[in-house]
Length: 279
Image (tube, rainbow, N blue to C red):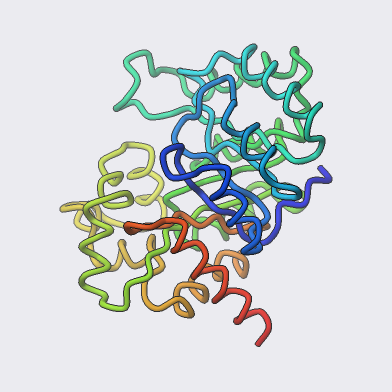
């Protein structure tokens, strides 16, 4: 794959991003803007964000296989690729059993979805999968360009790199919060993802594989678990924490901003990262 994703990606939900915001993210130096939380199959917002920028890559994190028809997604991919060649990456995922009544056979369902994308001419090298466990990581390795996991500390990144090998994209996302007071930062994190997401089965199982206990998962997360999932502190501290994923083997670190102004958080993180890299 020859898309330049950059060292850092910005994760934003539909209600958090506008074309103007995408242009700000691009100017701040982010290589990719990831649309979170099951964007619809027409991928219209992704196209609008690409229209408003010049070099920024836009990706989905992730298209949900239960809610987005594969043939419609494939048609949207081809439309966007024709208009903005080399600037779109399709991230897909299986969703959560707690949300989708039809949720079953996640591995086989994802394989079937990839088969449909393949028949519709979507290149495997332009697709990444949200993979946490060993079986899904093998699927990402064997059928796509790589993986875009979230709710993961740097130790997961280290293990995922070992599982998928060199030459495959590893694009973990990490929460970021500009808040110097550790107790306040943890309270904010517990009232939003990641704290509220710890009850989701696939996230909880992933964290248990890394050695976290039921006590860590209870009550929206122990201090040590929240600190592992959320880079909090002043901007320099946050930047340093995010870069641990690069040291563990990530190709790009995705930044999930927490707080009242996600764009402002992304800009602060970018400034601190540039300062750290220059130093």
